[in-house]
Image (cartoon, rainbow, N blue to C red):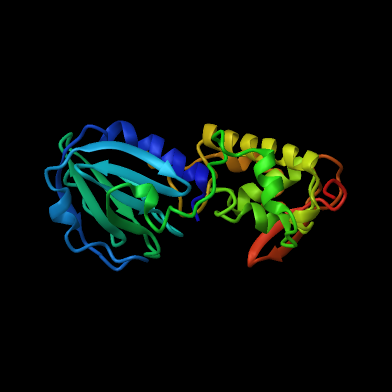
Length: 271
């Protein structure tokens, strides 16, 4: 699933090409996504100008006309910019034909994405209202994590992946941040000290910032706004390296399943 850096890379890739452009025509080929695409979306968008493209967690928010399109890439979704007249593929479910002559195309083989219309403030929508702070903004502090963790027995990895606690720390980056902070992924969230939460907060920020700077992680189903994959996987220290030597101490990295997700850690470096 595309994580926060992939979504932010997509936002940065498409924003310069769609902001200020008029949607000449919206074409919906498939409405059966995770949340059904509104039947009136084609009529709502036709002739409207894209005012901005922002992000909240893993959701893209397109301000269009007097409303907003809320989009989630799901398990396998991606956005591409193609030339007008480009033949759509089997899994190309939605096109925005722009006044520039380009087409913003949404592709989603597994159909687990979301494309829906929101009137009013999109941040109050049920999909966004309960989300925690953004990890790269001022509201995300070590005090925030430490206070939210008090008394919690859930594993620290599951805790930081909870979007109600902080948004966008998906599986890959939770593995990487915990390794960088030297915290064992199975340690109870409530038994991590304030000092270690300060370290973890910094590591989460650093790992996500580096991933965004390098274009996101190369995932099989992800491509950026230009159609090119990211290359952050070249810098991954633990994810995908189970059974290989730790880059810090040469101990063999262990791989387990936690919450149905692959979890990789160093038994020597992470306590």
